[in-house]
Image (cartoon, rainbow, N blue to C red; front, side, top):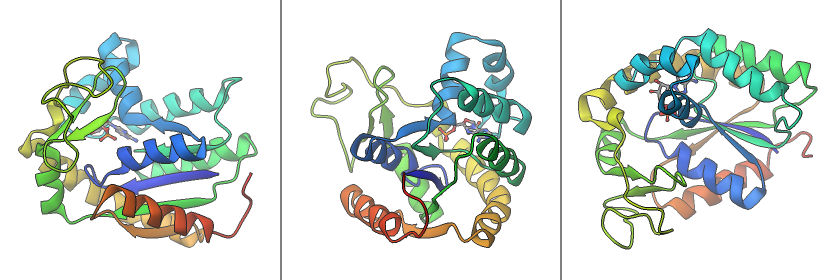
Length: 220
Ligand code: AMP
């Protein structure tokens, strides 16, 4: 299974990508996580990306395309994967198409998680994450057993700097500006499937698996 999850910030892509990866044994490639880790470590791409990530702006295509191309050029390249947060622009989609062609890997589906913008703002302001194991929580819909602590005993949860309301609105604006072209691109390749990202996590997961199971094409 090779799938891209598309959706606005806060659409639940990260949560669903994590479930798909655990249950279908797919490699979870999350460019937000890769970039945040690079920022945390202070690597050269991390230092370049930092101002964009903190403001909720898209990191330049060339930088993120190189990170993804490097990941797929490694000996342990992902062969069965779920992409979370990449591609986000038409230029990234073109670069990723080329990477996959070079690796002789076919995409099987692109799932668009659709969520209303105001719901996203509410969702993100309650979002916390474990910095160690990356498990996401929500103060209302998916709270940790002990307030502020990861259920896996990793330690205290953190809120992302870019989950502040004005930053979330900027991220939504950027998302809408770039996604229309991306959606058309994958629709024209017959890969696009739309699933509502509103409702309970397991129901949404079930809908995603349903559309993936009804997707024509190779399935190795
Ligand atoms: P995410 O965790 O996917 O919401 O990403 C967090 C931040 O990382 C975004 O607001 C961007 O600054 C950056 N980012 C993640 N993925 C990409 C991408 N594909 N292209 C450009 N910037 C990205």
